Length: 267
Image (cartoon, rainbow, N blue to C red; front, top):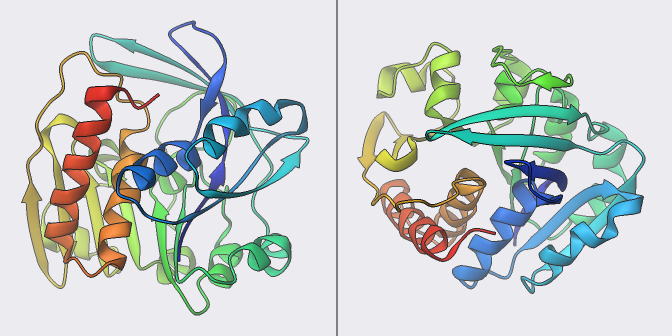
């Protein structure tokens, strides 16, 4: 089984009403689109159980835990450029979680994607514990975003122990730039992660695996809200990889899934 783990966030986009966000929601919508019977494990404020409702509407199995310290973001889009502010920082996913309720929830999961939001969201020790006996995917936000409130500025923080436990790494092109990487095989291979996916927004993606970098183009969707597109892409990509597709084929399939979701609205 494929599982997605991450915070369900309180998001405000362009001054609008509070709505659910985070990797679990956008991933779940992509997984519903491809018919994947996956698991979503998440946390949010005990006062905001209503934010879990959109997750449950996807029909996927959802395991959630209330927390006192939750994640919230403010997002604005100006001429296609996203301005992101982290308003509140949630509790990290601890090794005790991995050995307790989280590990129990993931007992049948052979592929797991960790939708990290900032550095320290999933400490290296937690990742090492979760990696036992399964394929582990990780969001590169956990390598470049500082875990503090305020406008989000990319500050690289590479942890060799963390990277050594990851099988698949997802980076946006901005995150790759922040890490000093160019989207080619030699540069991406320097991380020591077996499989690296770099999403390029409207320009598609690059997948690196077994010393080869393949570029997969995308079809832009005019006027679409791109919030969550990277999470949706990775969910569809991992479902395809788990189902036997090679990296380039999985990226093409994920690209089409995201195009369909953006055309209809990811929200």
